[in-house]
Amino acid sequence: MPWYPYLPTGTPPYSVINTNYFGPPQAYPPACAPPHDFLCAIQATDSSGQPVITFALLEEMEFAINNRIETTNVKLRPSVV
Image (cartoon, rainbow, N blue to C red; front, side):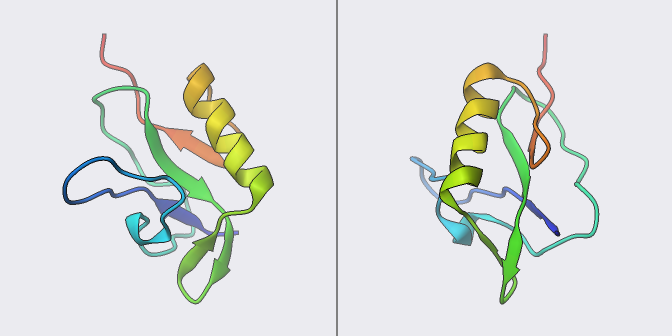
């Protein structure tokens, strides 16, 4: 499955379920710069160049963000200490 970098633009609030906030599919997870533990990229099934965000993936994203732990399909930005 390809990786999709999370690239929110415009005025907050941003939505992790809005597929327009994800960049084009990539073969490998992108390098993510700080600032804080926050969504960097997801690994998902492709649908015409956009990620398919299933309920299971959404739960995995929520777990990763809330616990600040990367998972198989969710990559977070590194934390700045």
